[in-house]
Each structure stands twice: as C-alpha cells, then as structure tokens.
Amino acid sequence: MKKALISICILVIAIAGFAAETYWKARKPYDEAYNKAAAVAKSKAGIRAADAFYLYNGKSTYYVVVGKGKGGKKKAVWIPEKKPERVTVLDLNTGISKQAAVKQVVQKRRPDKILSVRLGMESQIPIWEVAYIKGNSLGYDEVPFLKKSN
Image (cartoon, rainbow, N blue to C red; front, side):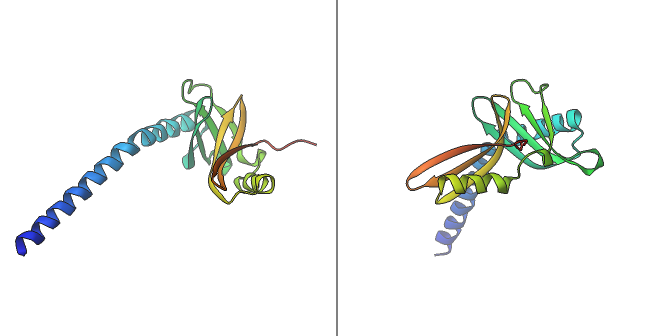
C-alpha cells in the first residue's frame, strides 16, 4: 500500500511538472512581446510602467501598452510588430473608455457574454476590439477608440 501511495505521488508530481513546463513554454512568446513592447513604450513614449498590455492580431499584429508617462498622464502606445519604430501615442483621455466600448457593443449586438476587450489598430485607426458570444456564435466588433468630434 505504501509503495502504491509513493508511486501515485511521484506520478502526480511528474504530471504537475509537465503541466508547468508546458504553460511556461506557451507563455514565452507573449512574455517576450510584452517585454519588447514595454521597452519601446518606455523609450518612445516615456511610459514608466505598463498598467495594461494588449496583443492585437488583425490585418497586422500590434502590441499596445497603456501606462503613465511624464506628469502622470495615462497614455496608450500602439506598436506595430513588424515596424516597432512607427509607434502611435495617444493620451488615454482622447479616446473612449473600455467600458464605453463594451456598452456600445451591448446596445448594438445584445451579446450573451463579453469574452475580451483589447486595444488594437486597423487601417491606421485605433480601435477597441470586443469579442463576444451570442447564441452559438463568436463575434468581434471594432469600436473606434477616438471620440467623435462634433
């Protein structure tokens, strides 16, 4: 009985180790993208620390870092994966909030569940991408980040 218990413990530890290694390997590209984007946001936009990081895969891949710059102003920095020197920097208050983007999608689409909300860029236009489920379908809506001027 004691040998069986020891064998089961060893098996559980081996499975946990394998699962942990798999998780770390799967996270590695995301972590590398985050580190690269945070460094670019710091050097190009003066972001001191990243409060949020979004990995957006649309027509092009963008890394988006949100954080405080000089003077404590919150900024969003869009960094194209293929041309990281061509950053777009906007004060966060020049655009609509994450909650406002979700509200627009809820009013327009009436989803059953919101899955994720992330900043991205399509055709040089900053957007909020809202992923949701409605019925048995997965949907994505792109809500322009910039406020409409009257």
